[in-house]
Image (cartoon, rainbow, N blue to C red; front, side):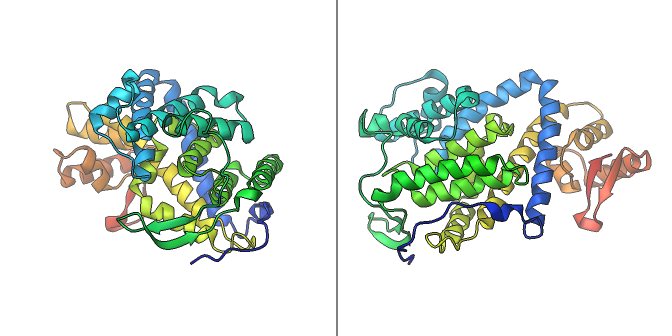
Length: 357
């Protein structure tokens, strides 16, 4: 059980300047930045496809973020709520509609929004007002709360973390907003490293009585969008988190250990966020290739899959795209492409992957 600490957490991210400590994370950051650049180029020449992906992503984000919190409805109702602005019929659907409205608000207005109290409270109000009552959303908690693992009957099984006390939330949030602005302006700190740290601190403050997880994911999108990483518009960031929900909670819990004493680590959550971003870029790559692999000849289809990929592809990856093509044929085409100097091989034997030169 996490014991409550008497001291106030200090919001400092200067440790991110130490490249010897974060060399692996800097490397991952560079990989994601490279994928971002290649995806942006692809987007500029495939507007129609990316427009379709944008529509799909909103639906998947609404469904995925609420699923993380155990909020569900039918797939048909999700579609009606997102695509047709259907009114909610249940309590769960009220929460789903709230996320629909909030994610559209962030996506359409991020250029004009700042990471501050006004934006954070507005996002929260849009999320929860339908089911807690208008005028009650967008307000910091007035009583203390805990993050706990619960039994089936709703009773507390294990206290995981004790967040900031309600009386200290205003001060803590003000310090968090200020710290983000200060360190965001520090050119020695990549924004991709800073954003996950800020989200860990937001979740550790837990400023609202309800909806903190969903607000945190919308704030993540907001901060990523503002730094030019708009992959969440086209591939659901929340849906990817839901796929690895256990890893998400594990990384967060590890980062909250000794948080009140400012002796915590942020690395597990930074690494998790990078993995989710990588999965998003990998998924958009997969969907793009799917639309491009419909040529008649098998050798042309294999070549298209490898050449169009932004990430290294194994023989198994190619076979997944082209299940009607044998591994033997794939191997023959890969050997030919290497000989023609069109692709190069990474690794050996069964672990080998291939990428366009």
